Length: 97
Image 1 (spheres, rainbow, N blue to C red):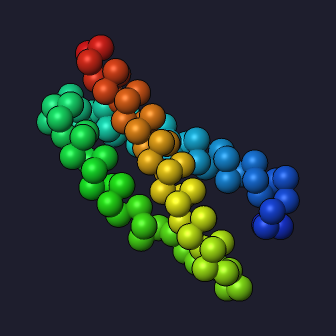
Image 2: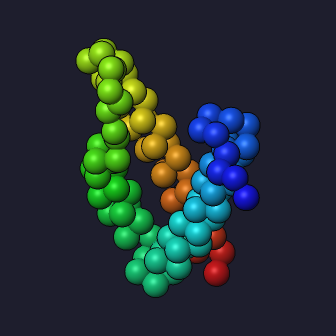
């Protein structure tokens, strides 16, 4: 099996599927943590992970400072919203049990 070319439709599809799989795994793990440690633990988790979010950002060669700042802000905003959505769903799931 050949590795798909970066940016190709196949690579984007694979990336999306892996992302969805990881979102489900994270949601299940967070729901279990909410059940065992309490919903307040999820707020601590979110605060800690959002603080670490900057470590995930990677600057690309040739980016201008403006581009880097814009991408960093977008990454933090989108990442924060995605994490909050997963935590909210995990909280609801834990409350059902």
